[in-house]
Length: 482
Image (cartoon, rainbow, N blue to C red; front, side):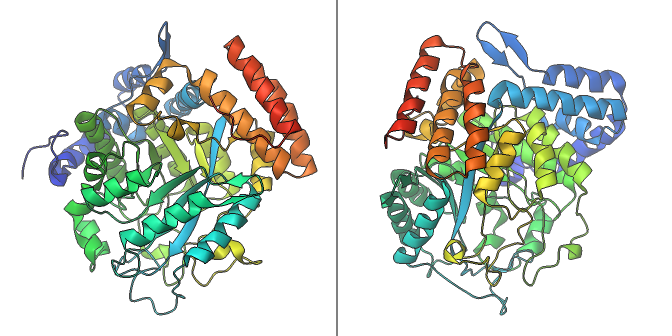
């Protein structure tokens, strides 16, 4: 076997099985090594400097030690530092988005996904451009500004041309005061040339879940179809970045393989992107295996309890402090509430995981990718977030101002995010409250905005934000941004 090399472009060298196994052994041997645990925790703490807040992050070995640590007071300290880190770089803002399923036609045989080609129970659908238009208007009428489009892998039914046309359709729709300002894309691994086309189409983040970093398990879980190629799939983010996409999103499907193995592989992948491209993942998603049509999560014997899930999220936050973390409606309100504190910075709201689901009066189940645990409306989610002291943000300014990749990271690391993202969040929240919110949500929201405006440190930025918010309230002017 080749040596571990985070700068290599070969999957088995930057996700190195022997290195992961040695890491897990090292973590197990040192999980109660108080001196080492304290040293790692001290390294993880955010520090204020004249240039802004600094966080060193943790290596995959250091983070794995913390994940393995079972000393109760040290686990609580992990949680405290994770919360400090999240607040230092993302504040109390929570970015809102919704998935939009374009097609569930798929040629793969993934054992954990109901879209697998041998599932004869699921209703197969592909949205036409007119159906996409109706779905987008329904999402705009809720108040959404950011979408993540999803499609099964089918080179004939879902070619890149269909994806590109769909993106163009989504961006073209302006309904009342609604507009989708950013489309993120979660589709199968593809070529450098296709990634260039996605970049030219104006996408935000390219998202691709690894599912599992354990190669043997990966091959067994993907027995047929193009997704069976572990190396091609694992090396996709390097091709995406070569194609000009500088914001990429990682993720594993927790429950397919041992969580400590997946955790180490995930952090190693982030380290690889940093080593090769100079910038780590823009986001990391943390889905867990859930029930779906023709899929029983009990078949997978690596499911993880909520307590362990929370610890994974806290340790990811400490390892990659500048990376956005996403949790979906797969998880319950209770789980989402806990993980928001520990590191999550983006959540979906009012999601429907079926093709064409947003235009249906009742939530359809015949083409869902997974069961949705949190079925609240967007207004209910927004109100809940604000009642818990969070600012729901519909902001997409960084993408449209060119603050992506290393430019976003430098803004985050310098501490200037309070003068930029904070007012943008308040202005987009004002848009939501004026255009879409219930009376109760409006009352809570406007009171929160008034309080949060005072936290913008730059006086000129605060004054301008107040003026823009007044304009939003008193006119149809929208889309102010710093």
